View (cartoon, rainbow, N blue to C red):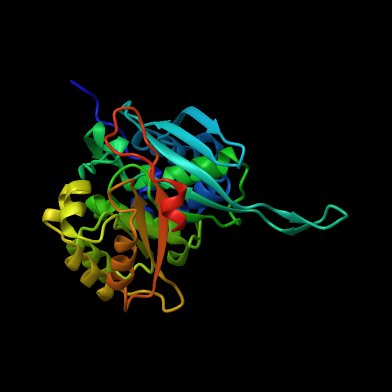
Length: 322
């Protein structure tokens, strides 16, 4: 019989934690050790009584992630492969968006800006025909703590202080809205002022378009942004690329986006994977402009990157320019 895995302390908001430890003020101290000090051992929490440290150690773990592979690119991108407590693996990506700037004397003028691409599931249920992750099928949802731990782990690995902000994009493995409860809990934890203090404005949820859950996310009023993996302008092609489109067609997605509470200063990101001979023609471009009329939108054109066994090809530079 398998031994049940202990939950991680990263699973809890400050309010949740204050209900689990007594006296409740200890929760804020624990939060400081978790997020400001980024400790990985209970004995490092020096201002907690030994009895409380032992109680926490008996019931919880701190860091549920183990780095099993790390790929560093010349542009500053770092791709992590993490192992979870049950032996499953998932990926997280650390992205350098803007390099630090210094004056002639070497004094720092502007800090580097980073974005972290996090996973919300091991595998994915959506089954997009172009996606390599989909080939492996779906294994399980990540817990809220496993989502949160990704940010803590990459910040720690890059000596990134707690008071230095990062942006979060939920664009890794999995469909975020298919794990909505744990996603929402993670968003709340990230926003905790006594923790990482990453506001909703710095968090973007990317979805393949589960329109009913776009509505639910909006009703939660978490203040996050959304990005839509659109990839096609007609339902026939989109259903080929994303079979889930049969249940949540383009019209339903556009309607849900229009209902979503969006910061008036921001635009909704629409991701459009350009595939040779499928959606790289001028007609598709014109239809896309018409489809998004009335929405404050930004389109991110992504070249399809072929992989062994893929049925699709990368578009030519000429088709993209024209």
